Length: 386
Ligand code: PSV
Ligand code: MN
Image 1 (cartoon, rainbow, N blue to C red):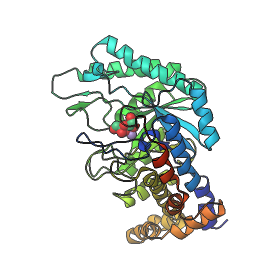
Image 2 (image 1 turned 30 degrees about the vertical axis):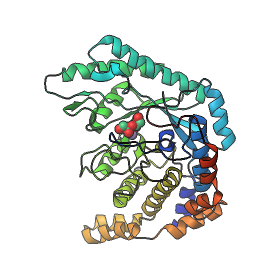
Image 3 (image 1 turned 180 degrees about the horizontal axis):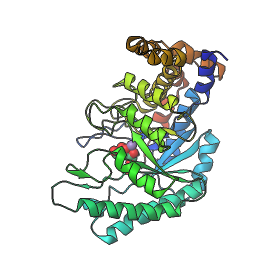
Image 4 (image 1 turned 60 degrees about the vertical axis):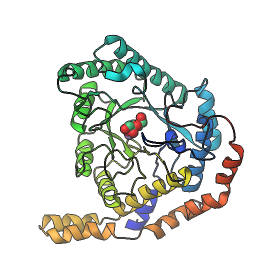
Protein backbone atom coordinates (compact mmCIF):
# COMPACT_ATOMS: atom_id res chain seq x y z
CA UNK A 1 0.00 0.00 0.00
CA UNK A 2 1.30 3.45 -0.83
CA UNK A 3 1.71 5.99 1.97
CA UNK A 4 -1.25 7.94 0.67
CA UNK A 5 -3.48 4.88 0.52
CA UNK A 6 -2.47 3.96 4.07
CA UNK A 7 -3.27 7.48 5.22
CA UNK A 8 -6.70 7.27 3.60
CA UNK A 9 -7.46 3.95 5.25
CA UNK A 10 -6.48 5.36 8.64
CA UNK A 11 -8.56 8.49 8.12
CA UNK A 12 -11.61 6.40 7.29
CA UNK A 13 -11.37 4.58 10.59
CA UNK A 14 -10.98 7.75 12.67
CA UNK A 15 -13.57 8.45 15.36
CA UNK A 16 -14.10 11.76 17.16
CA UNK A 17 -16.56 11.88 20.05
CA UNK A 18 -18.61 15.04 20.40
CA UNK A 19 -19.79 16.39 23.77
CA UNK A 20 -23.50 16.82 24.49
CA UNK A 21 -22.80 20.12 26.24
CA UNK A 22 -21.36 21.69 23.09
CA UNK A 23 -24.85 21.60 21.54
CA UNK A 24 -26.40 23.56 24.41
CA UNK A 25 -26.08 27.22 25.30
CA UNK A 26 -22.86 28.24 26.98
CA UNK A 27 -20.93 31.35 27.79
CA UNK A 28 -18.48 32.87 30.17
CA UNK A 29 -19.11 33.88 33.76
CA UNK A 30 -20.19 37.23 32.33
CA UNK A 31 -22.94 36.15 29.95
CA UNK A 32 -24.55 33.17 28.27
CA UNK A 33 -25.86 34.18 24.85
CA UNK A 34 -28.83 32.01 23.91
CA UNK A 35 -29.06 30.78 20.32
CA UNK A 36 -32.25 29.95 18.46
CA UNK A 37 -32.83 26.25 17.78
CA UNK A 38 -30.70 24.99 20.65
CA UNK A 39 -31.75 21.56 22.02
CA UNK A 40 -34.07 21.48 25.01
CA UNK A 41 -33.21 18.00 26.22
CA UNK A 42 -30.65 15.21 25.74
CA UNK A 43 -32.72 13.66 22.96
CA UNK A 44 -32.49 16.82 20.86
CA UNK A 45 -28.76 17.08 21.61
CA UNK A 46 -28.39 13.61 20.12
CA UNK A 47 -30.39 14.68 17.06
CA UNK A 48 -27.85 17.46 16.48
CA UNK A 49 -24.89 15.18 17.16
CA UNK A 50 -26.28 12.75 14.58
CA UNK A 51 -26.09 15.55 12.01
CA UNK A 52 -22.41 16.07 12.78
CA UNK A 53 -21.84 12.37 12.19
CA UNK A 54 -24.01 12.35 9.07
CA UNK A 55 -21.91 15.05 7.41
CA UNK A 56 -18.44 14.10 8.68
CA UNK A 57 -18.76 10.31 8.87
CA UNK A 58 -16.30 10.22 11.79
CA UNK A 59 -18.29 11.35 14.84
CA UNK A 60 -20.21 8.21 15.81
CA UNK A 61 -20.39 8.72 19.59
CA UNK A 62 -21.64 11.42 21.95
CA UNK A 63 -20.37 12.07 25.48
CA UNK A 64 -23.00 12.70 28.15
CA UNK A 65 -22.72 14.86 31.25
CA UNK A 66 -24.53 13.89 34.41
CA UNK A 67 -26.71 15.53 35.73
CA UNK A 68 -27.05 17.83 32.69
CA UNK A 69 -28.19 14.85 30.59
CA UNK A 70 -30.18 13.07 33.25
CA UNK A 71 -33.16 11.13 31.86
CA UNK A 72 -35.57 8.62 33.35
CA UNK A 73 -34.72 5.89 30.91
CA UNK A 74 -31.12 5.62 29.71
CA UNK A 75 -31.82 2.55 27.63
CA UNK A 76 -34.42 4.60 25.74
CA UNK A 77 -31.85 7.38 25.25
CA UNK A 78 -29.34 4.85 23.93
CA UNK A 79 -32.00 3.52 21.58
CA UNK A 80 -32.80 7.02 20.36
CA UNK A 81 -29.10 7.52 19.61
CA UNK A 82 -28.95 4.24 17.74
CA UNK A 83 -31.98 5.16 15.65
CA UNK A 84 -30.17 8.37 14.65
CA UNK A 85 -27.02 6.44 13.73
CA UNK A 86 -24.89 7.38 16.75
CA UNK A 87 -24.03 5.81 20.14
CA UNK A 88 -23.62 7.09 23.65
CA UNK A 89 -20.00 7.58 24.65
CA UNK A 90 -18.22 8.62 27.83
CA UNK A 91 -20.20 9.51 30.92
CA UNK A 92 -18.85 12.74 32.43
CA UNK A 93 -19.43 13.22 36.13
CA UNK A 94 -20.20 16.55 37.76
CA UNK A 95 -19.07 17.20 41.30
CA UNK A 96 -18.70 20.95 41.01
CA UNK A 97 -22.11 22.56 40.87
CA UNK A 98 -23.71 21.85 44.25
CA UNK A 99 -23.38 24.22 47.19
CA UNK A 100 -21.98 21.32 49.19
CA UNK A 101 -18.90 21.35 46.98
CA UNK A 102 -17.64 24.78 47.99
CA UNK A 103 -14.54 23.27 49.61
CA UNK A 104 -14.25 20.38 47.19
CA UNK A 105 -16.01 17.10 46.46
CA UNK A 106 -14.05 13.86 46.66
CA UNK A 107 -11.27 15.72 48.53
CA UNK A 108 -13.60 17.69 50.83
CA UNK A 109 -12.63 17.78 54.53
CA UNK A 110 -16.12 16.58 55.53
CA UNK A 111 -16.68 12.84 55.05
CA UNK A 112 -20.39 13.39 54.34
CA UNK A 113 -19.62 15.55 51.31
CA UNK A 114 -17.05 13.03 50.12
CA UNK A 115 -19.70 10.33 50.43
CA UNK A 116 -22.11 12.37 48.32
CA UNK A 117 -19.45 12.89 45.63
CA UNK A 118 -18.47 9.22 45.51
CA UNK A 119 -22.13 8.19 45.39
CA UNK A 120 -22.56 10.43 42.36
CA UNK A 121 -19.61 8.74 40.65
CA UNK A 122 -21.07 5.33 41.46
CA UNK A 123 -24.38 6.48 39.98
CA UNK A 124 -22.48 7.41 36.81
CA UNK A 125 -21.23 3.82 36.59
CA UNK A 126 -24.84 2.61 36.96
CA UNK A 127 -25.70 4.86 34.03
CA UNK A 128 -22.82 3.37 32.03
CA UNK A 129 -24.33 -0.06 32.66
CA UNK A 130 -27.63 1.17 31.22
CA UNK A 131 -26.17 3.02 28.22
CA UNK A 132 -23.44 0.56 27.37
CA UNK A 133 -20.82 3.30 27.76
CA UNK A 134 -17.35 2.06 28.58
CA UNK A 135 -15.74 5.25 29.88
CA UNK A 136 -16.29 7.18 33.09
CA UNK A 137 -14.64 10.58 32.72
CA UNK A 138 -13.67 12.35 35.89
CA UNK A 139 -12.72 15.96 36.26
CA UNK A 140 -12.58 17.44 39.74
CA UNK A 141 -12.86 21.14 40.50
CA UNK A 142 -11.29 20.36 43.89
CA UNK A 143 -8.55 22.51 45.32
CA UNK A 144 -7.87 25.41 47.64
CA UNK A 145 -7.58 29.15 47.27
CA UNK A 146 -5.29 30.02 50.15
CA UNK A 147 -2.17 28.55 51.74
CA UNK A 148 -3.17 26.71 54.88
CA UNK A 149 -6.82 26.37 53.83
CA UNK A 150 -6.58 22.57 53.92
CA UNK A 151 -3.93 19.89 54.14
CA UNK A 152 -2.51 19.16 50.69
CA UNK A 153 -1.42 15.64 51.61
CA UNK A 154 -4.67 14.66 53.30
CA UNK A 155 -6.60 15.84 50.27
CA UNK A 156 -4.51 13.44 48.15
CA UNK A 157 -5.35 10.61 50.57
CA UNK A 158 -9.07 11.39 50.32
CA UNK A 159 -8.80 11.50 46.54
CA UNK A 160 -7.07 8.11 46.43
CA UNK A 161 -9.65 6.58 48.75
CA UNK A 162 -12.63 7.88 46.76
CA UNK A 163 -11.17 6.87 43.42
CA UNK A 164 -10.41 3.38 44.73
CA UNK A 165 -14.03 2.84 45.72
CA UNK A 166 -15.25 3.85 42.27
CA UNK A 167 -12.54 1.78 40.59
CA UNK A 168 -13.77 -1.31 42.44
CA UNK A 169 -17.26 -0.73 41.06
CA UNK A 170 -16.14 -0.73 37.40
CA UNK A 171 -17.44 -3.68 35.44
CA UNK A 172 -15.95 -5.75 32.68
CA UNK A 173 -14.83 -3.55 29.80
CA UNK A 174 -15.37 -0.33 31.74
CA UNK A 175 -12.63 2.13 32.60
CA UNK A 176 -12.02 5.33 34.50
CA UNK A 177 -10.49 8.32 32.75
CA UNK A 178 -8.93 10.89 35.06
CA UNK A 179 -8.56 14.42 33.76
CA UNK A 180 -6.17 17.05 35.12
CA UNK A 181 -6.26 20.82 34.96
CA UNK A 182 -3.68 23.17 36.37
CA UNK A 183 -5.99 25.77 37.89
CA UNK A 184 -9.57 27.07 37.99
CA UNK A 185 -11.85 27.15 39.85
CA UNK A 186 -9.25 26.73 42.58
CA UNK A 187 -6.41 29.20 42.39
CA UNK A 188 -3.81 28.13 44.95
CA UNK A 189 -3.74 24.32 44.82
CA UNK A 190 -5.66 22.00 42.56
CA UNK A 191 -5.92 18.37 43.65
CA UNK A 192 -5.35 16.91 40.18
CA UNK A 193 -3.33 19.70 38.58
CA UNK A 194 -1.11 17.86 36.13
CA UNK A 195 -0.48 14.65 34.22
CA UNK A 196 1.99 13.43 36.83
CA UNK A 197 -0.57 13.52 39.62
CA UNK A 198 -3.22 11.91 37.42
CA UNK A 199 -0.70 9.28 36.32
CA UNK A 200 0.36 8.48 39.88
CA UNK A 201 -3.24 7.88 40.95
CA UNK A 202 -4.05 5.85 37.85
CA UNK A 203 -0.95 3.71 38.27
CA UNK A 204 -1.91 2.85 41.83
CA UNK A 205 -5.52 2.14 40.85
CA UNK A 206 -4.70 -0.34 38.10
CA UNK A 207 -5.10 -0.98 34.37
CA UNK A 208 -8.68 0.28 34.16
CA UNK A 209 -7.60 3.79 35.20
CA UNK A 210 -6.14 6.04 32.54
CA UNK A 211 -5.27 9.68 32.05
CA UNK A 212 -7.19 12.22 29.93
CA UNK A 213 -5.27 15.00 28.24
CA UNK A 214 -7.48 18.06 27.82
CA UNK A 215 -5.46 20.28 25.52
CA UNK A 216 -6.72 23.45 27.23
CA UNK A 217 -5.62 22.41 30.70
CA UNK A 218 -1.95 23.35 30.61
CA UNK A 219 0.11 26.40 31.38
CA UNK A 220 1.01 28.41 28.28
CA UNK A 221 4.03 26.99 26.53
CA UNK A 222 3.64 23.47 27.93
CA UNK A 223 4.89 20.84 25.51
CA UNK A 224 1.72 18.75 25.35
CA UNK A 225 3.05 16.33 22.75
CA UNK A 226 5.81 15.33 25.17
CA UNK A 227 3.15 14.46 27.76
CA UNK A 228 1.30 12.46 25.10
CA UNK A 229 4.47 10.57 24.15
CA UNK A 230 5.20 9.80 27.80
CA UNK A 231 1.71 8.61 28.66
CA UNK A 232 1.63 6.41 25.57
CA UNK A 233 4.99 4.87 26.48
CA UNK A 234 3.55 4.02 29.88
CA UNK A 235 0.29 2.67 28.46
CA UNK A 236 -1.67 5.27 30.41
CA UNK A 237 -3.13 7.58 27.77
CA UNK A 238 -6.87 6.95 27.84
CA UNK A 239 -8.35 9.89 26.00
CA UNK A 240 -8.15 13.42 24.74
CA UNK A 241 -10.44 16.34 25.37
CA UNK A 242 -9.68 18.46 22.34
CA UNK A 243 -10.25 22.19 22.25
CA UNK A 244 -8.02 25.19 21.76
CA UNK A 245 -6.96 28.08 23.86
CA UNK A 246 -5.23 31.41 23.58
CA UNK A 247 -5.07 32.15 27.30
CA UNK A 248 -6.50 29.65 29.79
CA UNK A 249 -9.22 27.00 29.48
CA UNK A 250 -10.85 28.85 26.58
CA UNK A 251 -12.71 25.81 25.16
CA UNK A 252 -12.52 27.24 21.64
CA UNK A 253 -12.65 25.08 18.52
CA UNK A 254 -9.81 22.58 18.36
CA UNK A 255 -7.19 23.54 15.81
CA UNK A 256 -8.33 27.18 15.78
CA UNK A 257 -5.69 28.70 18.04
CA UNK A 258 -2.72 26.49 17.24
CA UNK A 259 -3.12 23.98 14.41
CA UNK A 260 0.63 23.27 14.50
CA UNK A 261 0.36 22.08 18.10
CA UNK A 262 -2.53 19.81 17.17
CA UNK A 263 -0.44 18.35 14.36
CA UNK A 264 2.49 17.74 16.73
CA UNK A 265 0.16 16.01 19.17
CA UNK A 266 -1.33 13.81 16.46
CA UNK A 267 2.15 12.95 15.23
CA UNK A 268 3.09 11.66 18.69
CA UNK A 269 -0.21 9.77 18.91
CA UNK A 270 0.54 7.96 15.66
CA UNK A 271 4.23 7.51 16.45
CA UNK A 272 3.34 6.04 19.84
CA UNK A 273 0.70 3.61 18.54
CA UNK A 274 -2.15 5.61 20.07
CA UNK A 275 -4.26 5.88 16.95
CA UNK A 276 -6.49 3.04 18.10
CA UNK A 277 -9.95 2.73 19.69
CA UNK A 278 -8.17 2.39 23.06
CA UNK A 279 -7.55 6.11 23.01
CA UNK A 280 -10.76 8.14 22.87
CA UNK A 281 -10.58 11.31 20.81
CA UNK A 282 -13.19 13.57 22.30
CA UNK A 283 -14.02 17.22 21.89
CA UNK A 284 -14.61 19.33 25.00
CA UNK A 285 -15.68 22.68 23.68
CA UNK A 286 -18.22 25.44 24.05
CA UNK A 287 -19.54 27.52 21.20
CA UNK A 288 -20.51 30.72 22.91
CA UNK A 289 -20.81 33.09 19.97
CA UNK A 290 -20.61 30.94 16.84
CA UNK A 291 -23.28 28.63 15.41
CA UNK A 292 -22.85 25.37 17.26
CA UNK A 293 -23.43 22.50 14.83
CA UNK A 294 -21.25 23.89 12.00
CA UNK A 295 -18.60 24.77 14.61
CA UNK A 296 -18.54 21.18 15.78
CA UNK A 297 -18.35 19.96 12.19
CA UNK A 298 -15.45 22.37 11.61
CA UNK A 299 -13.74 21.08 14.77
CA UNK A 300 -14.01 17.47 13.63
CA UNK A 301 -12.52 18.52 10.28
CA UNK A 302 -9.67 20.30 12.05
CA UNK A 303 -8.84 17.07 13.89
CA UNK A 304 -8.97 15.21 10.57
CA UNK A 305 -6.62 17.71 8.93
CA UNK A 306 -4.07 17.49 11.73
CA UNK A 307 -4.28 13.70 11.63
CA UNK A 308 -3.85 13.58 7.86
CA UNK A 309 -0.74 15.76 8.05
CA UNK A 310 0.68 13.65 10.87
CA UNK A 311 0.05 10.49 8.84
CA UNK A 312 2.01 12.01 5.94
CA UNK A 313 5.25 12.45 7.90
CA UNK A 314 7.81 10.38 5.99
CA UNK A 315 8.98 8.06 8.77
CA UNK A 316 11.91 6.57 6.86
CA UNK A 317 13.26 9.96 5.80
CA UNK A 318 12.82 11.24 9.35
CA UNK A 319 14.63 8.29 10.93
CA UNK A 320 17.48 8.60 8.45
CA UNK A 321 17.87 12.31 9.14
CA UNK A 322 17.71 11.74 12.90
CA UNK A 323 20.23 8.91 12.77
CA UNK A 324 22.70 10.99 10.78
CA UNK A 325 22.27 14.00 13.04
CA UNK A 326 20.88 16.10 10.21
CA UNK A 327 18.89 18.49 12.33
CA UNK A 328 17.72 20.67 9.47
CA UNK A 329 16.59 17.78 7.31
CA UNK A 330 14.73 16.12 10.19
CA UNK A 331 12.87 19.32 10.89
CA UNK A 332 12.21 19.77 7.15
CA UNK A 333 10.60 16.33 6.91
CA UNK A 334 8.19 17.21 9.71
CA UNK A 335 7.47 20.66 8.29
CA UNK A 336 6.89 19.26 4.79
CA UNK A 337 4.10 17.12 6.17
CA UNK A 338 2.67 19.98 8.18
CA UNK A 339 2.71 22.30 5.20
CA UNK A 340 0.93 19.84 2.91
CA UNK A 341 -2.56 20.92 1.93
CA UNK A 342 -4.47 17.80 2.96
CA UNK A 343 -7.89 19.16 2.10
CA UNK A 344 -7.99 17.49 -1.34
CA UNK A 345 -7.04 14.17 0.29
CA UNK A 346 -9.83 14.54 2.84
CA UNK A 347 -12.32 15.43 0.12
CA UNK A 348 -11.39 12.17 -1.60
CA UNK A 349 -11.74 10.26 1.67
CA UNK A 350 -15.24 11.67 2.13
CA UNK A 351 -16.25 10.93 -1.43
CA UNK A 352 -15.05 7.35 -1.04
CA UNK A 353 -17.19 7.09 2.09
CA UNK A 354 -20.19 8.33 0.13
CA UNK A 355 -20.18 11.73 1.86
CA UNK A 356 -20.28 15.25 0.54
CA UNK A 357 -16.66 16.45 0.29
CA UNK A 358 -17.56 19.74 1.98
CA UNK A 359 -19.33 18.92 5.27
CA UNK A 360 -20.02 22.48 6.44
CA UNK A 361 -21.60 23.55 3.14
CA UNK A 362 -23.53 20.29 2.94
CA UNK A 363 -24.87 20.86 6.47
CA UNK A 364 -25.87 24.42 5.59
CA UNK A 365 -27.70 23.23 2.48
CA UNK A 366 -29.48 20.48 4.42
CA UNK A 367 -31.90 22.90 6.05
CA UNK A 368 -31.39 21.33 9.51
CA UNK A 369 -30.39 24.68 10.99
CA UNK A 370 -33.62 26.34 9.82
CA UNK A 371 -35.71 23.32 10.83
CA UNK A 372 -34.55 23.34 14.46
CA UNK A 373 -35.04 27.09 14.72
CA UNK A 374 -38.63 26.68 13.49
CA UNK A 375 -39.46 23.58 15.52
CA UNK A 376 -37.69 24.07 18.83
CA UNK A 377 -39.98 26.73 20.13
CA UNK A 378 -41.00 26.82 23.77
CA UNK A 379 -39.53 24.77 26.58
CA UNK A 380 -36.23 25.48 28.23
CA UNK A 381 -33.06 25.46 26.20
CA UNK A 382 -30.22 23.27 27.39
CA UNK A 383 -27.23 25.05 28.81
CA UNK A 384 -24.89 24.99 31.77
CA UNK A 385 -26.74 23.07 34.44
CA UNK A 386 -29.34 21.49 32.15
C1 PSV B 1 -13.97 21.97 33.03
O1 PSV B 1 -12.72 22.51 32.81
C2 PSV B 1 -14.30 20.99 31.95
O2 PSV B 1 -14.09 21.64 30.73
C3 PSV B 1 -13.48 19.74 32.07
O3 PSV B 1 -12.51 19.77 31.08
C4 PSV B 1 -14.45 18.62 31.82
O4 PSV B 1 -13.99 17.69 30.91
C5 PSV B 1 -15.63 19.36 31.28
O5 PSV B 1 -15.59 20.60 31.93
C6 PSV B 1 -16.93 18.74 31.56
O6 PSV B 1 -17.14 18.58 32.95
MN1 MN C 1 -12.17 18.50 29.55
